Image (tube, rainbow, N blue to C red):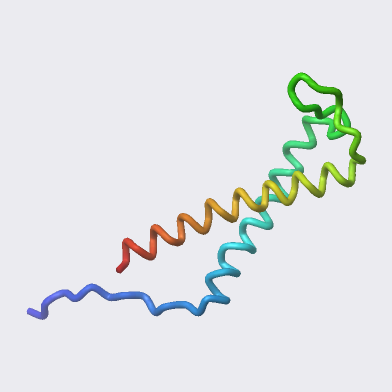
Length: 88
């Protein structure tokens, strides 16, 4: 009987890891933006207790997409970091 050894996956280059984080989060940010703005009119958005934001629709879509992308990318990066620590 041969003893079982833990097989470690090969270490991916930094570029590959970054792309594995950014690409899926980019796609999901687009999906989330479509879902959110199918329900919410971006022109009607306002800060609590303030008037409506005076931004164009394009500006609202762009800022929302970048926020969604950043949050999802951060979540994916944390997952990748935790999985890497689990393997090591």
